[in-house]
Length: 326
Image 1 (cartoon, rainbow, N blue to C red):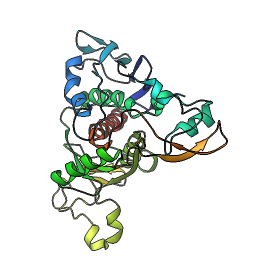
Image 2: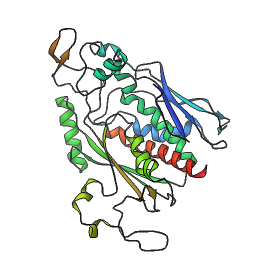
Image 3: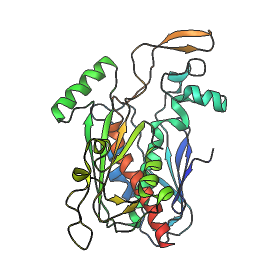
Image 4: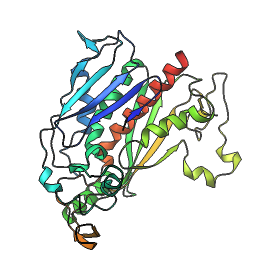
């Protein structure tokens, strides 16, 4: 498993959910950029658990930059950032070798690699702390970009009081729910991206679908644009700089940024680990058996996933922009 992404700004993830360390290696980051461990706190705090609907598992998530930075400045060499796993309960997952959890990677991991790992291993949402770290580094390349990321809906609801009520109810019922996250990015120059295989949509989608739990990605008006007429969907250009009266295309034409706000949304599935009793195949008994999953899990992974979406958009844009400069 290489677990790497990118052509110019290359990230490689390592470790597992319950290993001693996990982290990210980054190649292609230019030298001379300011990068200190304190610069990671704001985004890492956005991912940290502890609020309504998030897992009781609390990790300090303190980044340790072990190479690629000297005196707070990038050297141009590979950057490595590590995080410790200090709050693990591997005993909660002793069953997964024989009885894979529904909608997890336990079955596919067992079939492909011969085993399933405690806590989901490399497939766990815990690994996204490393993706957030990569996004923080990527943002330092182009600080003029402005990110505005928000949760659009949870379980189809958009009002905070209704969402909080739903999260409380599902927590008591040991159930889960999905959500939609929107990331809008301003100040992106015109001309980023290449037609077809390195289009902005292609590269960002690749990055976003690497996030555990993401099941849908759309740009601009998204899927509802299929219900519009051309006269409604077309974005009319209103000045010589390419600004448009609407932004149904999400700031991209022909796979290339057009200077308008880049708009992308991602749909997270409901958290697969739920406390409800479920039926799933048991290899040790050779038949379908009941399963009740223990452990500590988010009611809605979109809550902490929003900053991960933003981070991977930043990683994808860094790769695209470095390609333009090369």
